[in-house]
Image (tube, rainbow, N blue to C red):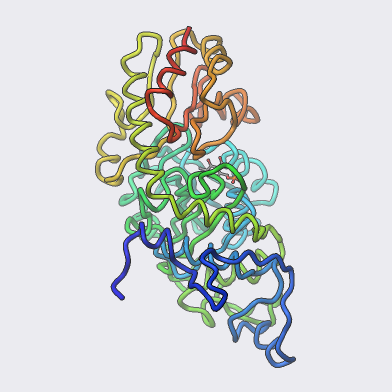
Length: 421
Ligand SMILES: Cc1ncc(COP(=O)(O)O)c(C=O)c1O
């Protein structure tokens, strides 16, 4: 069969109806799997046969989700994780150790910024932040200890868009893997592999799941990075913790994802619950239909806010003077997602009032829900950041983040209008 389109992959990939005739993927609530015999068990543990050992490592329902996300992102292997944060943390743990460095865009979700600035530093991994608008800054920060370059495909909540082509060229020039967190766009709106990503991360908690029912994360290995090119000796020598497997030598096509599962997931243990995978699969089936409506509603809402006398500014790539207009047109042909931010002329107090007055929009800390969600990052998602860190990541006190849902746009606008008193 010729390669199917993304809408078809989202509905069907990774699951074939079995002899039961069941039309939905099965939910395998089992933490362990009976081996056929001692030889079979040994082959599984030696990574010489496909199959299941223990749900911390793999599970048939998780596997369907992994196959589906992998097909959507065009990878050679995907791992499901307990959350977006655990996906990020395990990815960094697979690449870096004490003494190593990561270069990250400064335009990041606050939780990621916090993990990078503090928790990784406590482990001896230094994250250096570069201005997302300035690819040359990324290059200036490269040293022989750099193990990854990290960006969000469109940042939460500032809508900053990296110059993927330029940044990936820099990463390639220095033989550093390029990681893209594609949470806010999903593979329906943007496929980072086509613009040089080597590893793609998602918080599946958001648009992929779509219904705000469960947490989840994923990591996709694009199979594009040469782990033998010098920076990653740990991929090229025997792993004493996994009876001497040499990831780059024994698994040249998918070394990263094998290491992530067999070494890092095994040890950190942030595995996905099969129940969460099951529900995330239900969400992915409608991804393309939801995303089109999310994008349409966000664009209409941004337009309404731009023309409202009570609004001081709107940060959306379509806004007047946005430095990301061209990048959005170049990279995101189907739209630039549904998360954006704005500020009220009345500042912090007016923002607080708006959030307290909305009735349809949810005042919550989430995005990617089918419902419109409104958040005040300075007092919630980014509250653990210092004043200086908030400014560095573009979070002003008056900033309101909105994740446009899929309700009728007239009702969303009426709710905001009524709350803007
Ligand atoms: C862009 C981005 N990446 C990662 C995460 C972390 O995901 P999770 O909340 O599933 O751990 C979030 C959470 O909001 C996010 O917005």
